[in-house]
Length: 181
Image 1 (cartoon, helix red, strand yellow):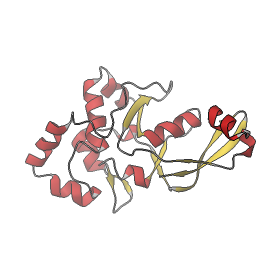
Image 2 (tube, rainbow, N blue to C red; image 1 turned 60 degrees about the horizontal axis):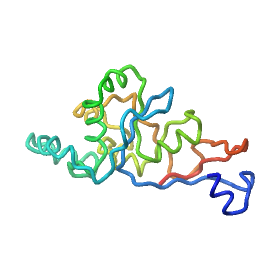
Image 3 (cartoon, rainbow, N blue to C red; image 1 turned 120 degrees about the horizontal axis):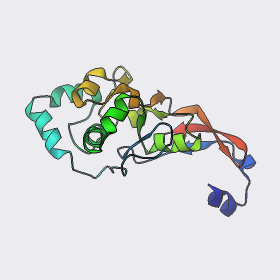
Image 4 (cartoon, rainbow, N blue to C red; image 1 turned 60 degrees about the vertical axis):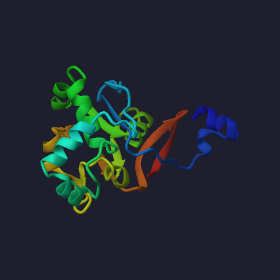
């Protein structure tokens, strides 16, 4: 941000709002208090959860997942990646169950950091790519969360794509975060 302001030859007080766009399926799981990730981000191309998705397909869950989320069962999406981190990083599942960890795609990570950890949110367009969000009801799906053993406590609040969702402080200046997509 400092470099962007310098390159544009403007001050933070000249910025009206911040908008965020990102690769939706990249996953980060971090400590709620310190903001430190518990594992490296798992990017959208990562296929490490292919076997888990195949097992869910063999159980006949493809149609139900598609009906709820609009997505096919595939490791491209965030759900099995966050479950993998919870299952494979020592202590992560217990910390998540205790409410000490939060999850998000890169937009959530950016908002968290821009607000000094005060706001944990995402917009519906990003939530809809997690394979944990019921697109018809517009909310996190408890059955899918249970299926993948992802605690609700790690999830971000879902906010509108357009509109102020948080406020960042840059060089002592409050700047609204007014868009996520």
